[in-house]
Length: 124
Image 1 (tube, helix red, strand yellow):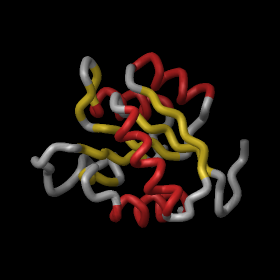
Image 2 (spheres, rainbow, N blue to C red):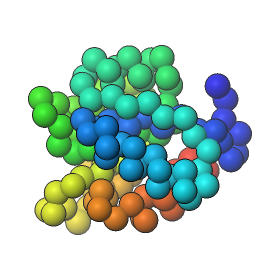
Image 3 (tube, rainbow, N blue to C red):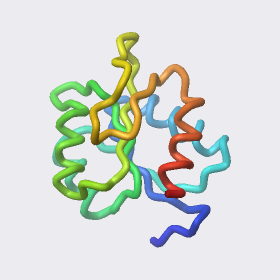
């Protein structure tokens, strides 16, 4: 499913919480972003989504039970080193700068910065 300049985009949400993933989807839709999403929460489902869904952006929780955001990032980078990747976390402890190959590290409690970041990443 090709995306035009205004979408619909394909966004992979790596999150063990269905509620958190839905809140992210709602925030992006409320901002007017046209997209299709798929949720994954294990290495196997991330690998399958990368191959079958071919996302144009990955938004990943940093901490997942039995699986981590770092592992998700490694899978994404092995698949496509240039695929935009953003971390979301519910943790109050957030480092000032994300790793060099990550496009953002944001708190789940404030998705406002995510909206502008997603638009910038998908437009460029």
